[in-house]
Length: 388
Image (tube, rainbow, N blue to C red; front, top):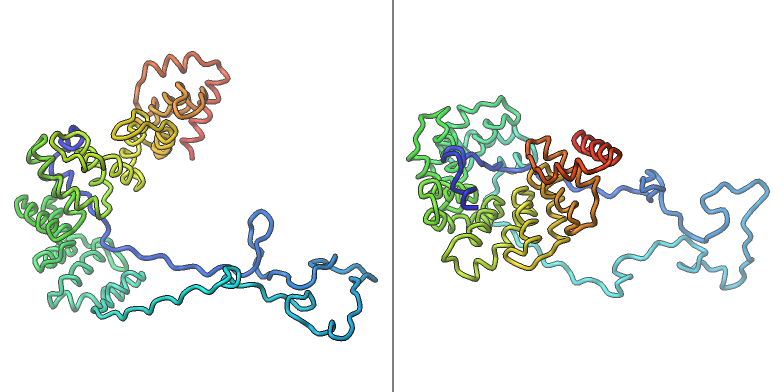
């Protein structure tokens, strides 16, 4: 870990990990009307059949045939719901539970200020968002300035214009918007659309981090690690990693797990959470975290050994394209660790990692020891995986 954090190729490289400023929420879909057909395919336009079950329900009655029914007399002729003489109206979920659910609490009235421009942006109405935000931006509203910058940067509904976006990010940063401070700090490091200013970039990054921007917290931590290689820098960065990790930044969660397990002088209650943070980073899709948590489970690092869990994480990382995980997964198959031995699967993953440039003499000997049929099957499986 220490080598991973301290061997970043310079501060400028580590800072370019910006996250999207906004996301358009997906729309809730209405459930399809009808009943499922065979093989899980919905048959649109149909409705569930109700009423008495007869030999001819759902089918055309043969000519001259009719369902036989007993004649009803007296009170029996009276239609009653549920006796089969009238279509059932079903049973709702409350009846099935045997009691009604408690009433939902009343909604609290929203007392904040509604941002129509940002609301339009979230719904994908980018031109409307720009029309609403630009006048406010020109009057000095930092949130509107950041929104205008984001629309221009991404070219959403308008021509992409990185230079104008940089201008508006700068205005918003000067007016105190943390997200804009983070973005403008990156722009200042890059120096493409504004004059490069490393010192001001660091100042803005720290300010954005102190104001709670999760991406700025992680990147400022990286800056401290680059400025102070070794344990001193890692310990200085740790509080920023912790704040960023709590807000869901997977890179920070991974960095935190490595610091907790590798750095001397870490409190025991924090060291005990190292595997928890690594798992959170792995679940977020960080492939290096998936590789490491697989190794931790197999070797019993920072917790008990769990070979099956380790194998599952190694396979997930390998399927995601991590070359080292593909190599390690081959070893797990060869040695039946967390799984049954499978020479063809082992050879498949070795072939994939070898094609990516990772040599392994032990696996090469294993591969050459397979018979021709097994080698052909492994190559076919590797080719199929690559094409998919």
